[in-house]
Length: 115
Image (cartoon, rainbow, N blue to C red; front, side):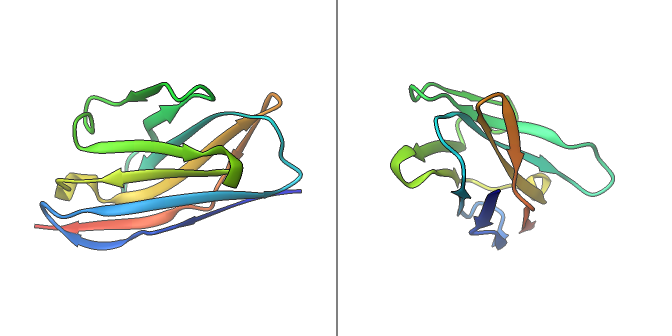
């Protein structure tokens, strides 16, 4: 079985920063892409950022220039550094790992940004 555990969520003020981490454990090998998604109350889950196995990164326009995705493949961990946070960044953040044609999702971590 594969387990993903996210950490680093919490409460931040507008303009502040948070760093999310997501670590995979279990029978997972040859991780391809790693990504973050988020779901705000009453809204559909949306994609935030992706990092490929080669380190190429892509971001949603809403977070470009403020968020940075990175990975440590040896630790099977993906990070999301979130700077200049805005109240509209409030959501549950989910990591997603794609490995061997299977998507694995974490349980989510709450991020709340106060104005």
